[in-house]
Image (cartoon, rainbow, N blue to C red; front, side, top):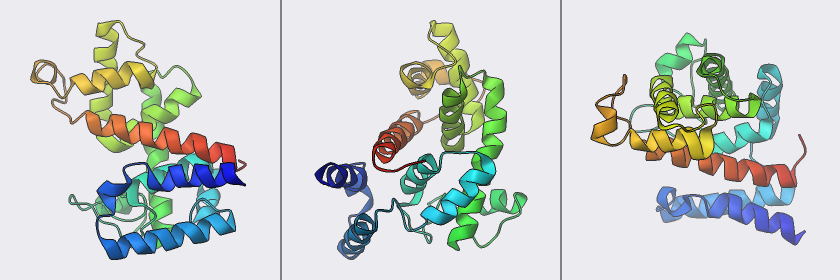
Length: 217
């Protein structure tokens, strides 16, 4: 199906692709893995595990796969400069508090990531998102930038007369402003590189929508 092939190519090659795969050997491996997944009709090498934890925590598994790709490019050995590890890039201390260790093991990395997203979702409810869909976006923003910065953005959006319960084109605009000194100096949690969570969510949403087109819930 040419449509599905086109969607996969857009998903795995166009979203900040060059930034993460400058190493030629790794690039070849990713291309090989991509071709294998496409032939199998799978979104990731870990679909079954993601579905298991998506059901346990009541998430759309396709959304979780999109987030997992954004975090680690499906590399269970990924580690950030800050020390976050595994498929969902969870800090070891946070994972331990959730009862999970050895994040390089795929199931542990997935379990920790989904459990942590559920934890931040419970707290994001108090930011008064407009509906359940917005709750998901607020949760992902908190996962990436920290709940404190998201609360600052919600307050600033309200001050600006924007919809403080809607992320895209509203709270995300306030998040960008928090990168500027004049706004960060007045925010409770201070400066944040607002462009990062904004891009993070837009990439996840774009990929998630494409996943919805080619796979069932």
